[in-house]
Image 1 (cartoon, rainbow, N blue to C red):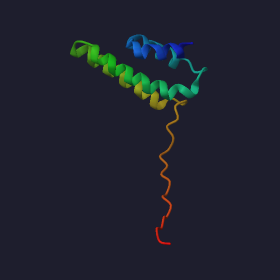
Image 2 (image 1 turned 30 degrees about the vertical axis):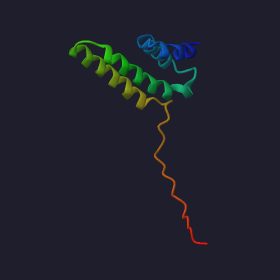
Image 3 (image 1 turned 45 degrees about the horizontal axis):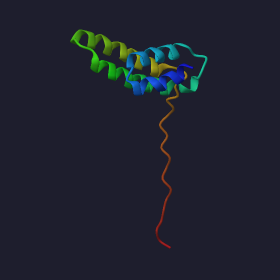
Image 4 (image 1 turned 135 degrees about the vertical axis):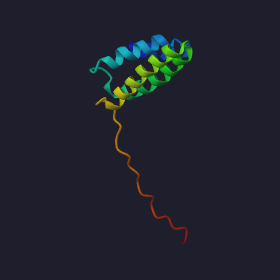
Length: 97
C-alpha cells in the first residue's frame, strides 16, 4: 500500500512525505526487498529536492550530513545488489568476406 502512495507523492511534489514513506519502507526488511536499491536511489533524488527548499547554511549542512549517512547505509545494505563490474570482451568482428 505504501508503494502505491509513493507514486502519487512524486508528481504532487510532496517530497517530505515521500521521504518519510521511504524511511518507513527502508526501516523494514521483510517486504519488497528487491526494490530497496530503487528506493535508495529515489530517496537520494527526493532529498536533493528537499535540500533546495531548506533555508540557512547550518540547517543545510546538518541535512547534507544526514543524507550522506543514508547513502552510506545504502552502500552497505545487504539487500542492495551492487554487483561487480563485469566487462564482456567484444567479439572479433571481421568485415572481410
